[in-house]
Length: 243
Image (cartoon, rainbow, N blue to C red; front, side, top):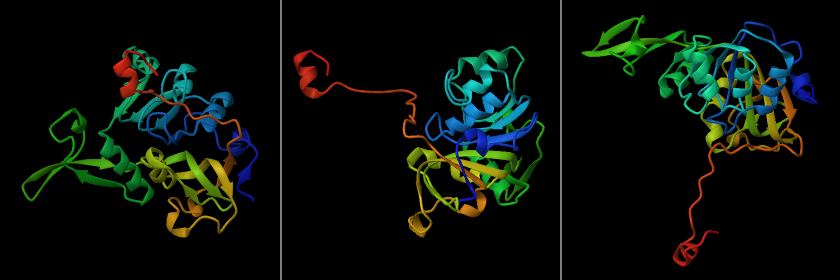
């Protein structure tokens, strides 16, 4: 019970400061720790370096922190859905360190495993490799990438227990699990909180040893859909109408 906090503000108490590095889980706006992001916005901390696959959208996810100009630098892979991000970057107001998506995931995994650097073929001979060490192994060229480790990781899980063991669903498993291992402190928001022993050990994605604080999402918590795509039903299409 000592890990459980009543809300996002309480879960982040004493952890936030200017110029810190934060990992923020999720993929697009799927599996993002939205309550924790909102609490960071309300705290007013600034000069943040944020490690995330993407930058959210203009009115959700990390887009909220970009709107208030609390982010100084993004270490990301895909940022194409955020007009605020593009405007700030092109104006020279935001630093960006682009990564191939697989390289970003491996940099985070390496940081969590205590691996300071690794070599990969991805990006060799491109702008990604500029300023980085390169080597040849068995006739193939590789670029060295550094592992990533943050002051704080914020993640979203479908289910968690009082000890901090976490289970993610589907797309939320892309970055949340590796980020939970790669920070000094990990704080998780969970949709469903159960007692220890209620999660099958074989189903746990993040062991509780990595998670220091938890909060339960409120009953009215809503998960945004980034792009809703629908198609006409065959019967409606045949009749010339929409359903």
